[in-house]
Picture (tube, rainbow, N blue to C red):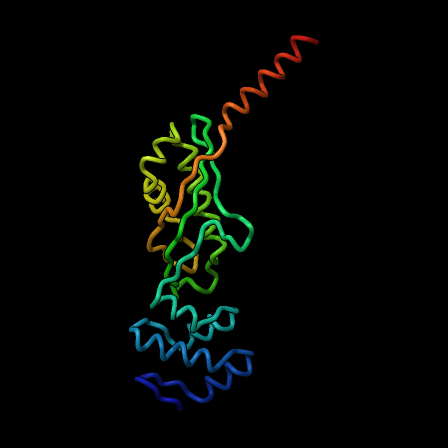
Length: 192
């Protein structure tokens, strides 16, 4: 029987997890880290997380030290989330989301990609429902407030701690472009 900081794990349990294809060392390290951080994580839950393909030690460490996720993810080639306010002006926004792992919903919980998608959706919805792009530029934290109120972390492996709007830039005047195209189409119909 292995004993560390009040943890008791039988050799039969360790052997069973090893034979199931689990990473025994990572599970034990995660249990020790969770115990030191006063995180309620038992052996069964840790092995379930490990066998589900998640890094259980990283999950515990992210519970202790939250991580920051960029939205949108620059690694996927996106640099901003673009949306058009009701006045036809496009705004391009970047957000930084601080999350902490929720070990209770880690197995079966959605991943970072879902958080990024939901925050992006919240940005588009908030900008799109603004009557003027100026309101968003004057008060960019309205995006954070609306997005946080929507409970975007439901069903995910994370708990959202904060959403910070890193940048909001003015894009194209989409409304004017559409009106110009409509006028051109009306002119061609009239000439025909």
